[in-house]
Image (tube, rainbow, N blue to C red):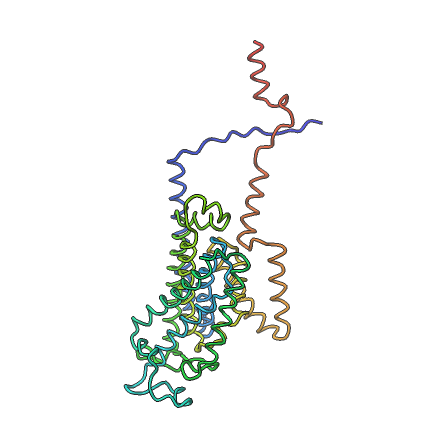
Length: 390
């Protein structure tokens, strides 16, 4: 039985055509980002009630930290289970600034509970908003760089890296829990009762401002990650992820590149932590809970690793599902959450966007050229034979 096939001629793509296609993709992506940003930043604040808008703002701030995790896990192959450290550092930084918005000479209220009469030196820089903003970015980045250097210089990677980051998380969690006289220990620092720019941080106008700031920073962080992963650095990070030993043989030292990307990811988590804190109203050591840091990884896994957009989509899907299910089914919503995670792992191991990409590849593959079972049935071979015979 003979197999019928179709001969498809593939025309080579010129460099000029490739550049046109690349520019077209960039234009489409830019307009898509602008359109989504306008919907979230201008339209939704007019539609959603204040409570739902504040909830969405929290989810978008968590999407920022998911972008940082996708940067180091999806593109560099570093599975961090301790990003709660950097998230909490950013949250505490902004909370300290808000708690210092008091009349001259007064101390935050919780200090009197522990007999502290003088402001600790570590609090004093947070009187300044510019210094606070820098601290939110730089302090988590420095902690991440130091932790990363101590790990990467010994060429520790894989599951051992994940275990060490989780161990560091536990160290920070226990340390912050025990600092009652410094940061109010397990009670944490409240922000919803503190003023900012003359208005209460929990007021609708302030929360709307925090929400819009979150949308803007989410777009900026996405563009930063997109820029980092699209050039030579991005290709090098993927090479480190796929075969670090070969990268060393080519003359590169992966240690410093991994330290750099880990520090950037830590800074991104610090920004996310600050935004989440002011929209939640409090920051406690529970931000460094092990389960919370693992959940950050799950958001990226659900959306799809090494996609950036998938990190945002995965975070929104999981958090919105958690909120909706906990409201509708408060007693059994955890079973729904577990079923969602199991479905993604078993059915879509590459996440939602990864599954869509695999489906597109499969459909394209079905339209590809089917090879002939025998040269005798190839029309080109038959034509050449006829020409030779004549």
